[in-house]
Structures are given as C-alpha cells and as structure tokens.
Image 1 (cartoon, rainbow, N blue to C red):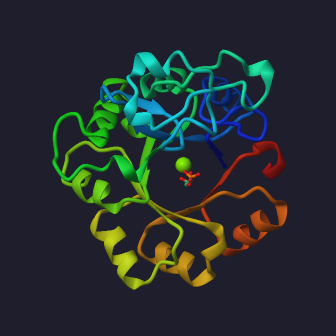
Image 2 (tube, helix red, strand yellow):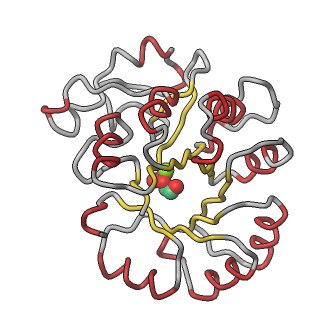
Length: 236
Ligand code: G3P
Ligand code: MG
C-alpha cells in the first residue's frame, strides 16, 4: 500500500504532517509529486498552480522558493493545519529516510527538451543520491521522456511509467526496453490481460488511486503488486 500524497484522507496532501502520519500508521511507501520553482528548487506539490492547496495564486514556477515558503499549505484543508508549508523535496527525503519507501512523481509540465544539471529529474536523482536513498525510491512519471533520458544514467533508483491509458504490447516493450521496475495504471482502465502482460515481462503493477474496498478486492484478484490509496487504514 502506497500512501498517495501522504495520508491524504486525514491531512493536507503533500505536506510534512501528511507524510509523518502516513509513516506512523505504517505506510509501506509514500507517494509525492514534485514541481520546479522560479529559482529552480524542487518542491512537493501536486498542482501546477497554488489555488487549490495553498492561500497563494498563480503558477508554481512564477514564484521563488522563499516566496512559496510564506504560503499556508494547511488551512485550505482544515484550520488546525494552519502554518503547514509547501515542503522541499530535500525536507521530505530527510523526514522519510530509513523509515519507509518513497515514490517521487515528476510532473509532466516541468519536462525540458534541453538536458542540464538543474532539470527537475537531474536534481531529484542528485538529491536521492546525496541522501543515500537509491534503494528506497521509485521515480515515476506520466511523461515517458523523463524515463527515456534517465535510463541512460548509472546508479539509478527504480523507475516507473504512470498511465491513464490501457497498455498494449508496444507499451510493455517500451517498459522492458527502459528496464522499468513497475507500471502504474489508473485502476479504471486496468484489466487482467494487462496485469498478466506486464508480469510476463517482469514488470510490477501498482494501481492508483484506490479508495474503496470493492476496487481493492477486484485489483487483488487480478494480482496487482500494490495500490496507491489516500486512506491506508480503510484499505488495510
Ligand atoms: O502516481 C500515481 C498518482 O499519483 C498519479 O496521479 O494526479 O494523483 O499525481 P496524480
Ligand atoms: Mg502523484
């Protein structure tokens, strides 16, 4: 079971309090989404804009880290979480290290055609290496170009392709070629055939985002290797 954006059923998503509580209730892995600020710092937030989960307005990449740190990322969820901040990836790596596994999702819009040391994916890899967490992390994205570029590098963490579309033989081949650890499909499009195809190719299947017992049981019957959920106790 992977805690999607932390313990999102009870805490403001992608914040330290959501991750701390996901770990405390025994999540085997936590998932988070990373974005790039105007001054090219890696921060943890799902949307491309601030409105839904903070008291700010506008695109994340129009603000520096110092500006984003002034925002409240907790009150929108409940006043008791007032003062919760948008965390940096480094802060969350420090919080998680040696406690549980972690899935870092690279959001599509930050992909840059030009490879450089400060692209979001290179910064993420370097931070994971700096913390010595290569064996505890899966890097994933809906944008396969990140994975195509990353797979050429050495000493990588595990990698995964996320999809809202069903996989055919060509997707399985692409996952195999990139030596991906896992495929992360939306549960609505998942079939037994796709699970079997991925497993035959040696690729694990983790499905998102599962918040009902019936869906969970259906996926278990298909033999998925894991699920993302907002509500670890419900699925447990
Ligand atoms: O990685 C699984 C899931 O997090 C993908 O969707 O939109 O919740 O990031 P989203
Ligand atoms: Mg995500």
